[in-house]
Image (tube, rainbow, N blue to C red; front, side):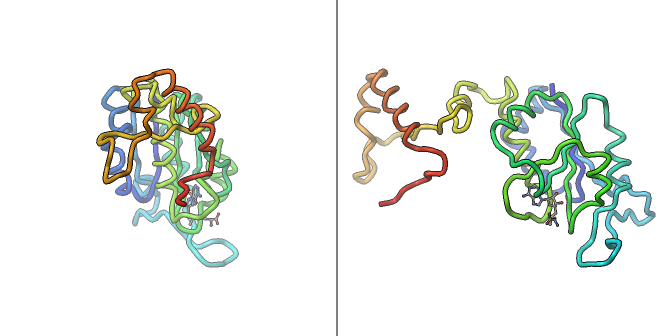
Length: 222
Ligand code: SAM
């Protein structure tokens, strides 16, 4: 069982995403306990304000430290890993997803606006993850990316674990290409070997394709 707490100023972004697919299944199966917190609920400000101007001036607003510290402290235990989604973080990949899937408690902090008060990174955050070398408006989509990748690795969450094991990045190679009915669609044919019933030949064909379709090769249209 994994517990996940998410601190955000844009709770509504999560509603559809966590009520579908593997994240929903993980909760239904009792494998994942998920809490999404609105940082405004932890603001000491009478107007529930969570942002302010940066000291020293400059453009953009900064997410204040108090709501984040007050909120996170309420859920923190010695087993928690506090993760800040940040362009400066380690770049997320399948290895990191596997590592996170073994934790019992993850606390995600979603940045917003120009960024968060640096004291959050200095004194509260234990790990920083980036989902790629570009800048998004907030940490909510990055959390969903990370959470989806992690949830499908929790044993019992996806119906067929063998299927996840053949996915790209699970081992060194990428996944093989797949086809389904019809065998001939407007003259575009499924490779004969897949229709042959020869399991050894199919296994070899898939292995060869997995080698051929290396990371980043993508779809090549001639
Ligand atoms: N000023 C910040 C910078 O240039 O590093 C970017 C702030 S961004 C507009 C607001 C928030 O979105 C960040 O604090 C972070 O939580 C999140 N974010 C943006 N891009 C991200 C990425 N590539 N990976 C993870 N989180 C990201």
